[in-house]
Length: 209
Image (cartoon, rainbow, N blue to C red):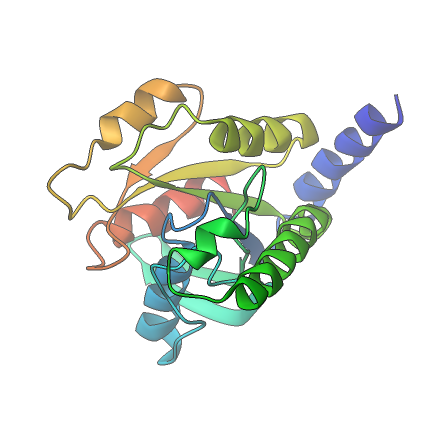
């Protein structure tokens, strides 16, 4: 009952706020390209990067916030703060880090930091207006992590757009993501090359801002 009331109040607050500046959280599984997307947007419009990108899982282990981004679109200006979240995982196994040459001590430390980052990202759901769920379009979208993230956002009544990232790769299948989550807006992009980012900005303006 309390949860339903909280969600109703959240929706009412969004209706009355209709902010000129939206606080937008970037959520998704590990290595889906959240930080690459945040870096691309920040570089294009602020001239600086946000964080480090790596093939090692959980490279982003702390929340990173970029404020006062102003994007010019065909429909005017889009003003937003971006909150780049650590990758969400249902479990963090230190052994996965050892495969990248880390010692057992380093791997365990990374796993502790990664677990803390996941918890922090979930807490931040109370502080965002809307979410981009960034998924890797070269991978099967039907995963426990993806369903958990999207289901949690739906339960909380948080508006979202699903970003089908990495369409620059030959094995990308953004249509598989659209089929998996037909109830949501899905925008295919390449955070690496910037392909289709204008369409993403316009979708944010239309559905989230």
